[in-house]
Image (tube, rainbow, N blue to C red):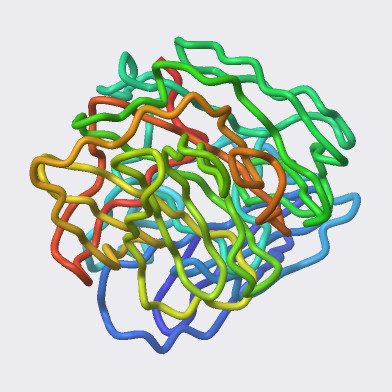
Length: 339
């Protein structure tokens, strides 16, 4: 990988003939994520979260060189010496991490796979990975909740985030996934975080994950998105209190959303930016007896989600993200570390 007036990746299949993939780079000197990934028969060159060049490599086998790997120079380090700063270098063999336009650059430092300091507080952790058409979903958290598909809710390999090959697909006409009521969903006055990655197909406000209903006096909380991002909760079981971001959601693309309570403040987060806050001093969220639904309200009767969902995580006892409105937060590395 080389960079300067252009970002370029060179490779050879015979040891003598150079092949390359490049993009003219006119950005000023600043910290950016760069990557090259091979996914199947295509090479993807990416910069700052965008794929900037591709190359077909059908049938191409990279040559196994005996040279050392050099960071900051070419060959034995005697030429093409890099003038700048480098951090967070990672090589993954067997997985092409970035193959979708508008992917989310990984946060730094990279997750090591066993480094979640709040793992004991994680109550739900579902990747929604698996075979196309599968209705089997695994909660990797210590709670090990059972998830049940309704309607045509199923795993799809047709559209997924760059770090995995599948996601939960919901068509907006009665598809959702349910999880039974549990003390894990009773946030009360505790710090907590509900987060996920999703690609929403419409601007209609739909439920992403909710223990919330439109009837009775048993409302809990719910995360909704459409042309805005909204989190609602109840204090009595019958009232509605909302935290809403005024941002206009962009065209469909994979992005991270989260709600966190840290002390006396709720933080509504989207794609690395804190978008809204709400003071909740002295407030206790109502303990609902409803099931939790992913892709619909808690009753599974309305607000059906149209789009794809992956990497849903609920942490109780820890608010992972905070800051003033429009400040940045570190988007979590995915898949989430387990353990």
